[in-house]
Image 1 (cartoon, rainbow, N blue to C red):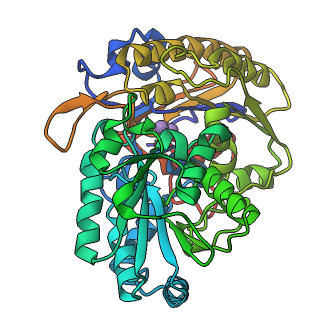
Image 2 (spheres, rainbow, N blue to C red):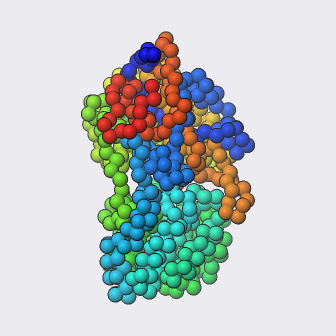
Image 3 (cartoon, rainbow, N blue to C red):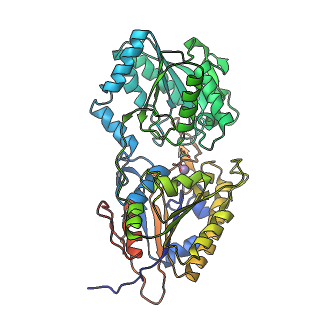
Length: 511
Ligand SMILES: O=C(O)[C@@H](CO)OP(=O)(O)O
Ligand SMILES: [Mn+2]
Ligand SMILES: [Mn+2]
């Protein structure tokens, strides 16, 4: 039976509601606790489905939570992309990492020169930025090459895993060093300092001074280091573990960065490189996966090709897009959705909304949403714009605080913004495709390794709502398939624009 063409192909709006996951109503589900009439109506009245946004469906290891990088990359690519966590795991399983020629050569050189190996990275199993177990492979390689001094500069998490679990993960690091017969934790600092990505160099410099020069509070145990934080694991102050001895980075040492995700470690990596160079220390550096640093740091595992996505198809079709997000998610609607490609194609405009630089999202759960919304409304009103791509960041960014009340407010603010955007879409006869990039706010508690249930601000493996609001209401609304994945977004967007999916896309148009 042939169905009538339900949607008039034409200009549209692709909205990523960051962290908008689906789960049944519960007392830790900020999205169902919030009063969100517009979002509720959207899902109830318009063609909608649930899209997989985690694990293998998007190119992650089975069962791992989605994240903004892979979420936006797959939304843009129209196909699952083997993410860096998966590629690193494959390199470990196949033995490629342990026998990596570059790693081997540097370890050998370091051992011969009597230098030290410094391993810097996030110590948790959150699987968004890093995995603590990856250390075991690196420690084994160091041990095999007889590097005598191996120092771990541990970054504590509390964001991708339940807070106040740092001590457990540092205990795991100690176990791994004992197993490998190499390495010790030399310094500890929270990710709030070491993984700032917003240009707050005062925070980054504390991490640089700690690992390069040993500037931090001396303490004799990892437990005391973590316990010294008044603001949880994210904000463990710079701490030097005295039993490790002198772990400063000196001429002839080498550094391995073991985060596999770049965005939050690259500022630190750049500043440390610059600081070592400025102080006359020649130090070899490698990173587990490829980083987007200013200074070139060779990677042990190369990233997957992500070309041939939405941006390339829009450019080939001569369509104009406007990308809008506030600073926290600006790279996601530009660089990541374009396949980690910094080139700005013709007819592509970028609008970066900036505002209050202080990131206290419990106090400011609305963030800069009013300005983001105004920019979307303005772009939608322009006849020359074929596609508006915007990210509404609040549900995710405020969700990360783990504060349920603030996250409920963020959901309600997003709902009000949606009302304005939907009105603008009607005024300009645009369709709207709204989708989450991964879950977050629909589950705000998690069981910690010790069995207790704690407030949790991290991502989830839940599917995300995907809704299409057609640009006309006088034809029967299409029915979307029952299940979808983020890989179906770009083919659907191209279909709604009146174009075919790109040849590199494996996702399908959902209508
Ligand atoms: O803030 C981040 O770095 C991660 C969580 O660690 O979230 P997202 O993937 O949404 O950027
Ligand atoms: Mn996100
Ligand atoms: Mn997030």
